[in-house]
Image (cartoon, rainbow, N blue to C red; front, side):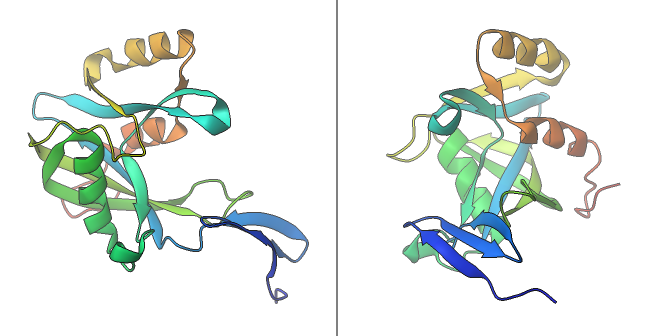
Length: 181
């Protein structure tokens, strides 16, 4: 049986915790993280690119975000967060959204769980680019050109988020019922 958690430090968005001698970080204001693998009808993967201060460079990512992290959306369902983040970051609405799998984002560092969704039947209804605190560039890359494109992005100094590779694994495996095959 584990001992009670000890809060070591806390900021507006993060809490540093110790449990049984292990230190980790949690997000006290969010009720989950969503990551969306969005593919257009013409087989293009929708990616986002943005500067990330912790790695001091631009990062290629899948659309993603926190669920319920703001007071006006506290308790937000994960599917609603996935739809909101997809629209906010990319300008797309999903005609189909399937929940696929929950994964640990970095089990030695945080208790954060990422829920992957696959989005299909996309319709572009806005420009995307994120909210007022974000500077997101939307990228639509043909699946048959993606390996070369990601290699070139990496060689140009951009970092590729690991969830991109996880999402590519899930894309053909997340069936209509929303389970991974």
